[in-house]
Every structure is written in C-alpha cells, then in structure tokens.
Image 1 (cartoon, protein in one colour):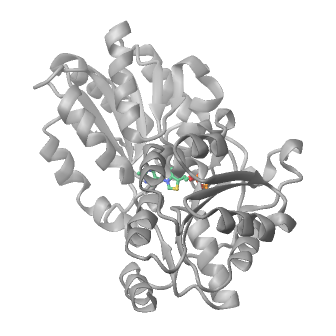
Image 2 (cartoon, helix red, strand yellow):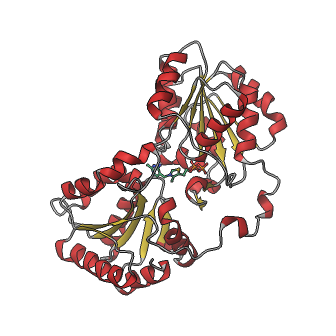
Image 3 (tube, rainbow, N blue to C red):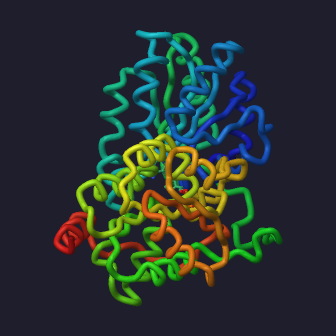
Length: 377
Ligand SMILES: Cc1ncc(C[n+]2csc(CCOP(=O)(O)OP(=O)(O)O)c2C)c(N)n1
C-alpha cells in the first residue's frame, strides 16, 4: 500500500502542487491527507468532476504547472467533456494528472451502480487515447508510474490518467468514530432521524426521489422496518440528478406531490437544475435538502454549502417558498407551510454528519425497484 504522504510528496517534487476533485470513498486516505496538508488556495473540492478538470486547465494556463484532479469513476462521464473538448492534445493540449478511483473493478464485489462503469474502465480509457496506467500498490513501483505519468503529460501536452484500485492507499487518519465530536453539531439530529421524521410528516401518498449515498440506504431500511415506500425512487448513481428525476416525474404527475430528498453535495453538483425547476415551477414539486455540510457518504469531506444561503438561492430562482430548520418537532408545520405555498418549494434540514455503522444496502436489484415503483404509480 502507498502512504498518501509519500504520493503527495512525490507529486510535489515533480512540480504538481494544486489539487481539485470530488471525493471518493476509495481515495479517502489520499483525500484526507490532501485536505489536511495542502493549503486551501491549492486544494478545491469542486461541485462536480468536470469543474475539477476545468480548474486544472486554469492552473496550467496561469502557472504552467500541472494540476492534479481526483474523482471516483462514477464521475468519469462528467470529465469526458472538458477532457476531450478542451484539454485534449487535439484542442488546447493541457497537461494534468487525473487520479480515478476504480469502483466496480472486475473481481471486486460492489454495488450494482458501479458494476458496468467498473467493467468498462479500461476500454473507456483506451478510447480516450490519452496516456494512462493502473497505479501499482507497491510504493516503489508507484513512484515509477507517477514519474512516467507526469512525464507523459508534459511531453504529450495531454492529461494523463491513473486508475486506482481499492486498498491502494494506506489509511493514516483516525476513523471518524475516534475523532473529537464537533460541539457545534452536537444539537443537530442525525440524517437518519430527520429522514424518519420527514417521511412521517409527509404521509403515505407522496412520490419520493432520494439522493445518492447513505440517504437512499437509510430510506430503504426505514421502509423495511416500517413498511410503505412503494413510491420511493432511490437515485443510487447519477449524483446531483435526483432533483431533475423528480422534475421529470412531476411534469407528468399533476395530482400527487413529488418530493426530492436531496443532499448538500448533490444539490451543489448541478445547482443550475434549481433554476430550471424554478422556471418550470410545477405546483406539485417539493425539495428537501438534508444539509450535513459534507460528502458524508464517501468520508465526510466538506462541501461549499457553509457559505451558501440555500433558501435565498431557492427564492432567487423562483421557488415559491423556502425555509430552514433543524428542529424535527417543527417538521409537520414546515411540511404544511410548503404545501400551503405550493411548489416548487424547498426546506433545508440541518443535520449532523455520520451514519450508523451497520447500515444495510437495498436488497432488491435496481431493475426490480424500478418496476415496483412504476407499478405503484
Ligand atoms: C457523479 C458522481 N460523483 C461522485 C460520486 C460519489 N459519491 C456518492 S455519494 C457522494 C457524496 C454525497 O454528498 P451529499 O449529497 O452531501 O450527501 P451525504 O453523503 O452527505 O448525505 C459522492 C461524492 C457519485 N456517486 N457520482
């Protein structure tokens, strides 16, 4: 296994000192080391993966230095556009290093949403016709491959990509459970408590579209324990698109309410979609953002939400009503206020990071869930 400090030091010695990316559980140890040691002006957690490629382009344009980008391969689709339309040697020829976490690698058990993306990673990388390699987990071999990739990027004036298998980086930080709890968060409910209280307040008739990550898993477990949930759609992949899936449903469903249960990282990933929801303004569309300030599902790395006034954003893009709370006892009143105002309306629910360690995963296949959902509608 590679010590993340050694990897970052090696890049530093090669002149690669700026980082941008969207966090990945498989790259958690590397991300934590970057977060802890690289100054904020040289490390940006971007809204989506394409923006990280764009930042590396900007870094190169201004400094002539290579930027490093990190992402989970589920975000690969988001980088293809700026890679091929801008950074590619056939266009501007911008060198950079792109570090891709390989979920769904053949032979490694993973969730359904990662399996095909994982299986076709190598042919996809071949198709890009850019320099790429799998990062070896042996530290000395890894050094050689990193040197080669940075050299190839410079020589070919091209992005070079490193595919990273599970378990390549050694964990160096204490587990979240050992870390000191943040006193500012102590009074906030957990996402799971807030989710249980919200679905209770919504009643049984709504259509619910849940965002990517732990929230969907928590909703599935809640339904397993308490029943219901026939009209829940779990957005197991495609982070950031739950709100547009809900819009597509609401457009064709004028009778029932459609509720999008979103995350702060996910809502920021494609924030432009809020403007489209506000513009089309379906009266049956409701949006709840569970804001824990971080990408909790992949390791708790911060999002940019701490400087965002989400209700103000919602108002500004045409939502009829928007509010914020962390008080679960007030949820029935908030739900009633959203319903009275009509859609699109938004509630920001402040919750604290973290999840149950024994949280399960959906036991139905996505295809089965989709069929049940459509039958229920
Ligand atoms: C396009 C894409 N990029 C990255 C991921 C990996 N990923 C899954 S969940 C998640 C974090 C979601 O954060 P947030 O919406 O704030 O919800 P939380 O996990 O905090 O509940 C990330 C980065 C993904 N599934 N898809």
